[in-house]
Amino acid sequence: MRIGTILDYGRPIEEIAADVVDYETAGLESVTLGEAYSFDAVSQLGYLAARTSRVELATGILPVDTRTPALLGMTAAGLDYVSQGRFRLGIGASGPQVVEGFHGVPFEGSLGKLREIIGICRTVWRREPLRHDGRHYQVPLPADRGTGLGKPLKLINHPVRDRIPVSIAALGLKSVELAAELAEGWEPIFFHPEKADEVWGEALRRGRAKRADYLDDLQIIVRLPLAITDDDRSWLDAAKPQLALYIGGMGSREQNFYNGLARSYGFHQEAAVIQDLFLSGKTAEAAAAVPDELVRATSLIGSAASIKERVALLREVGVTLLNVVPMAPTKAERITAIETLRSIVD
Image (cartoon, rainbow, N blue to C red; front, side):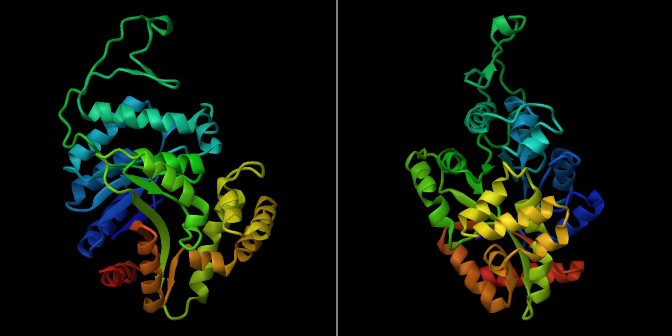
């Protein structure tokens, strides 16, 4: 089991890089940088590639509608090149608020797009002439849709690897099945190990049954707030605002994937209350309405002994990368937390 972290893209890149260098020394094995509608993740990961030597660098996530499939392939090959083979391409659908509200393209067909994109990227990385005739993407563009001058091209450069790891952020059953079938990794958010098989087990089994022989076992990558403490009360409360934001405000009342996830875990009434409060502008009350049980289930907050038990459970259900977010206020304390977790995992 590996240990990674999610980087805060709201901080200056020099500070982020300094932290990552020290985290790498402390035994951290992976860092993931999101994008949403911030600075792009790609340029910042290129900076981090030059500042680090061992840690895996990953996007978490690049929304599939923001770049053409070939550009995703080129970008992944470029980041793998500047990091000397340390890049993982994390992709996902994002949501209509970002895709339609910021990029101005329809939010539709993400499942089919993901399948086609992975195939196109792998063709690019193998340096084969790119030919693809799919429902969502046609490459080269057919003559009746353009000038007719397009021809199959292959990547000019020779990639470091001809298959760069792809992980898919997915919550829906069809998307999870697709990840288990085609991708190197699956990235669920707010992962509840006791409920994982009930919610996603059948989808994972269907996908794995179709998984190609050339793919290794599916990597399961989970994000977890981390606080190693014998007095967890304040840390549990500190983790609640993010859960409230996602369950209550990431999406509309009619379409909120994270609210649906909380309901699938059995928190039907709580999810409704959190959403009502958050959408009414009562964000503090929404956070207070997040159940302690949900926080404990989706985090590593507690004593070293209790975290050891949680890590064992996560390992048992197939988790391979703990993407932790140390909650300690100082850098020294965050590094200590990573080192302590490293000793627990080992």
